[in-house]
Image (cartoon, rainbow, N blue to C red; front, side, top):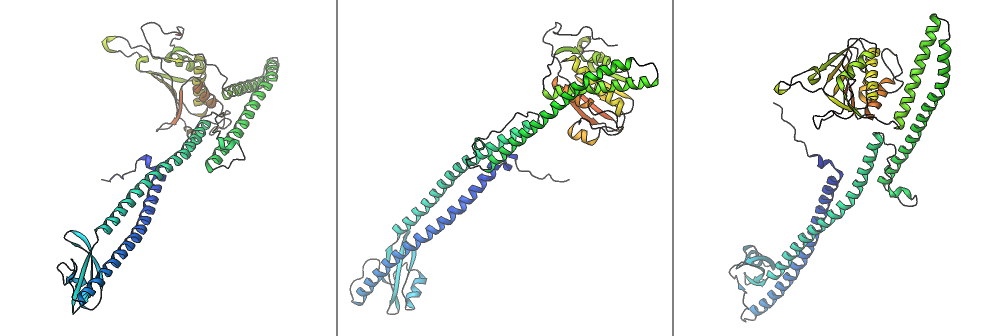
Length: 447
């Protein structure tokens, strides 16, 4: 059995966390270094002062011993408590000092040679030790205070940077979602004379990119709309002229091409309106299954419709017939979406084409080679088709735009056993009482 690798929490990957760890480590290292240097310097100076005092006292004790006078308290020949190492040093003929504890108190011993023995004296070292201990506590306290203050200042500075980065990321996501009016509008980019940091440079570049992209898309939308409008008038005259042609194969070919051109022109106009987001949605409540059945029948194709769940006539608790599923949508736009999905399945897939209604979800599936990889990865692209090469790639593009307009979710996938699957999820209407919902379409019945 493989062990699962422990993963660090997601917040440890944030820039704020990494900056806090870096600042803490650097502050601790700097505080430790400065503390060690100060501790060493002060300790060395304090010990040197105590050693000078002890050796001076030893000189006085030695003079008193040579004069045969009484030795001061704490002094004598081989006094009790004298460290063995210092005694050995004195017996060897040299003088020295040593800090040790005597009666539980820190003391400074000084010893020198005297008639082959050790003449020693002791000086109270507790005050010096207290100074060193107080210094150590001050170093630790000031280091902690400095680390805390540095962390607060660093967190404030880093948070300001990360807040601006998050704002830039949010604007980038809004632009990616289609809101081309979104801008970071960093105040540092408004005045060119102000120095700009890296975040301001990125924000300015994003705003410039969005403005350029918006201009290009608007120009493309205007071009598409203008071309469609300009083609509409001559196509109307061409269509009328085609109807005057004498019956025959050439006339049928001309009429077929004119119908194709008119359909393409209408698709271009519809796409331009969807791109401009000027469409107004007329929401009402409709029964989904009869509407799907009617669209499949009107498509003029052999399309199988399957109705599941309550729509198929299941029986609820108590023996009552379950209510059919109703959705709140724009009927015309929904019919356009379903019609385009069914037409695309017949045009680019293989039969059988099956439309399944399950609650507020409508699935259109064929049994062909499936959707191409580019469509599954980034959605349909206008004027791009693969496989049979038929069509202009506008049908699915319009279906996606109209689905978004009515608040539905359209997802494209490939079935495991082959075939393309388009799944449309609509906002289901929730009945508040037993009365008939407003806007109900009484004329929509299954055929």
